[in-house]
Image 1 (cartoon, rainbow, N blue to C red):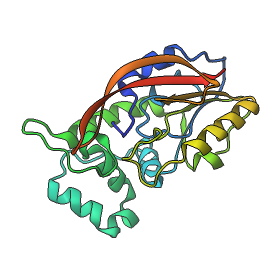
Image 2 (cartoon, rainbow, N blue to C red):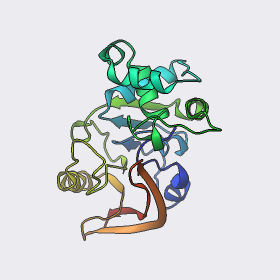
Image 3 (cartoon, rainbow, N blue to C red):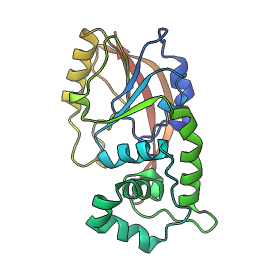
Image 4 (cartoon, rainbow, N blue to C red):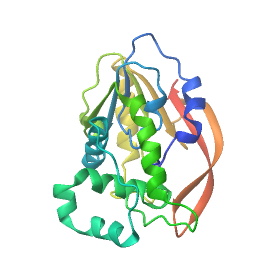
Length: 229
């Protein structure tokens, strides 16, 4: 299932350059569409996100909830705009907000195509993920308040610096300060970003096309993976 910043296209390339110790716990503070964590070896994994609707959706899917196959454009905007869905059907609200949205962006506009059913595609994709997520412990938490077991491997795919599509604006400076603290606490920390502070080393990079919003379409950038030098 796509989500803004999705790493599905090159997750395995990134995983190939991240050294992991046996039985080391894998932690993702920005789990999003779980497109990285679902490819991690079958070990204990913690997937966290500040989006409570998203976490509710993952938990429901693991408990057997099946998403709809069709959502019309009118239904899409009704679910988005009526508070009743947030309160009484948060799982559906989350699925439609991502799976039926343009480029998988959170409520980024109804995805449409003459020959495609994006809702069904998202449904099929997310159901394929579920068997790979059985041992993931999903948690709703701000990354700064996440309880992380000792000497974990922390993989972060945060909102990128100067990414105007994110609201509220993400404070990248505070994020990197938090990363430094986690390294000092004994964790292994890896961050996907375009840029990083000078004392962080790029260990992987790739030119990619990123589709963010309808108005701007796709743009090219260089995805990088950083760790502390």
